[in-house]
Image (cartoon, rainbow, N blue to C red; front, top):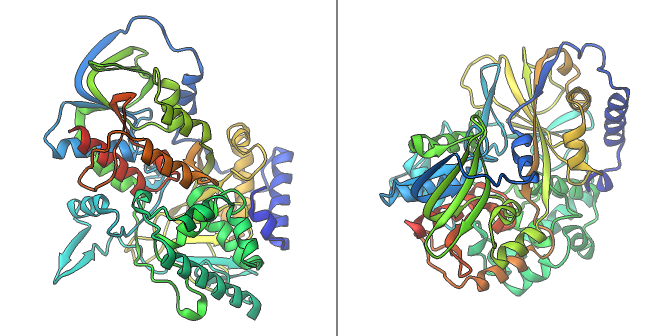
Length: 548
C-alpha cells in the first residue's frame, strides 16, 4: 500500500481496501454493477512495448527529409514545435506514439462529454514561467487591463473548487478541519511556519531551473519528506494524510518516497501553506477545462497540420556530424519510415530516449538509470444523472475521500453554466507507486475488477454511484511521470554544470544540448525531476528556440 496507509489508520481506509480486495478476489461484480459497460481506453501499451522487441533491421520502406525532427508528442514536443513556427521554421515533422498529441495533457470523450486523460488543470503561472505566460496571452486566456493581468473567467476554475469527505460529511477544502482538535491545528500552524521559513531561505521556482539551488535545498533533497517531518516533530495523522495526498497528487508518490525538497517545493514554489485560522493560502487560482489540459494541447497541435505524424513508434535515433536519422514504425500501415534531418529535438521520456539513441550522451544514461516513474490509473465514470449527496459542502470540481486509496475525482461538467445539473463524467485518479507490484497490477488486473473496486471506494460517499453509472472507461499510464526522489535536485544541479553548450532561449532557460550529441536537443519533464505542464513546456520552448 501507499504511504497514505501508514499515516491514516482509521476504519475508513481499512474497510474500503478490504471491500475492494474482496470484490477483486471474487472476480464478480456487486449486485447492480453488471450493467456498467466499458473497457480500457486512452493509451496503447502495445505500441510502447514494441520497443521491448528487436527493432527491424531491414531497409526502410520510405525515406523523408526535413530540416528538424521532433521525436515525441507530449507538451515539450508541442512547445518545441510552436517555438519553431514562431521563428518561421516550418520544415519539421513531429512523430507521436499515440493517435493524438499531448502526452499526459490529452483529453477524450465518453458519451459525448469531454474529460481529461491526465493533467486536469494549470495553476496561474508565476513570472518564472514566462514562456507559459506568453502562451496564455497568445490563446487569449490572459490580458493586461488597467495595468493588471486578468484571466478569462470562463477558464478559471468555478467555485466551489475542492471538498473533502471525512467522518460521513463533506467539508470545504482538502485540509482536514472538521472535528480536528487543538493539537492538530497547532501542527498546521507549525508546518505553515516551516514553509514560510523555507521560502525566506531560498527560492523555489517553477520551472525548477530558476531555483536558487541553495545548500538548504540540497540538504532537504538528501532525505525523504517523511524523515524531514519526523525531524520537525510534525507527526499529526491529519497533517500527514494531507501532505501525503498532495505529494501523490502532484508526484505520483507519497511522503515516504519523495524528497523533503519536493514536498516543500509543492507549497513554496506556488501559494505557500496557511493554517485554517489564517484564512487560507494566497493561491491565485487555476485554469481548467472539461478535457483538462487537453484543451491546451489541442490548441498547440492544431496549427501543425501535416507536420504532426501520429501513430509512430520511434525505435532508433542515430546522430552524426552531418545530421540525424530517425527510424519510426507507422502503426497503421506497418511501414518502416526513415526521417533524415539536420537536427532533432528528443522529447521522449529519458528512459525511452536512452534506449533508442545510438551512442547516447552520458548525462542521458545517468538520468535514465536514476529515473523512477509512477504508474497511474484513471477511470472515466459516465453518470446518467446527478448523484445524491451527503451532508456538508456542495459538489465541487475536485472531490476527495479521506483515507481512500485513490485521489478522488473531478467533475467534467463543473465548468458548465447550465442552471440544472445533468449527466456528467467523473474522472477518478489513483497513483499506484506505493502499492506492491503497482505497475504489474495496473496492467494485469481485469477491467471488471477495477470497476468493482472503484465503485466500492467511491460508494462510501455516493451509495447510488453504481446505480447511476452507465459506463466506465479506464486509462492506464504505466510510466506516467518522474518521481522526485531524494537526490533529484542534486542530479539536476550536476546536469546544469555538465552542459557544455548553454544557448539560452527567450525564457532564459538552459537548453539541453550536449557536446557528445550536438545535433540533438533534449526536452521532457523528466529532466526537471517531476512532471508538470510548466516544466515540460519551458524545456520544449527552449529547445525549439535554440534550434530555430
